[in-house]
Length: 113
Image 1 (cartoon, rainbow, N blue to C red):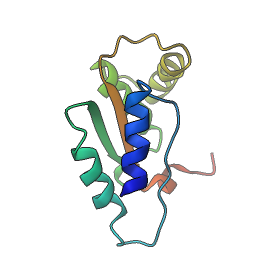
Image 2: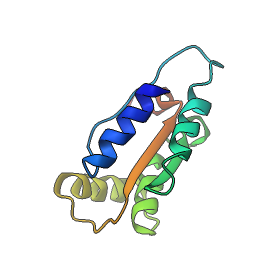
Image 3: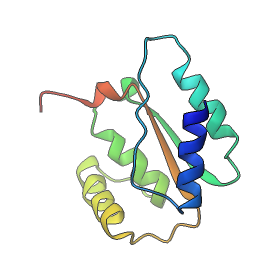
């Protein structure tokens, strides 16, 4: 819990970061629950989106979901991916709060393609 909290505190103090925290462990050990509890304590400071990659019918939909959270617009995954690339490279989005994205079951996004 402490590592997750420290990671988020550092990101908030730095007004965001482009880093990721990967949490791995055996199924059923409370990784998601612990992470959600820590994020809950920061809800006043951050915007939050949770994606369960196992529930996506197409792994590329992760781009659509993140883009929609940032902009309020729903677009196709390819368009979302291109726009997100621009947003994260150049910061050309007027955001007042830091966005925390939790992708549960991240390994489901890996495909042969």
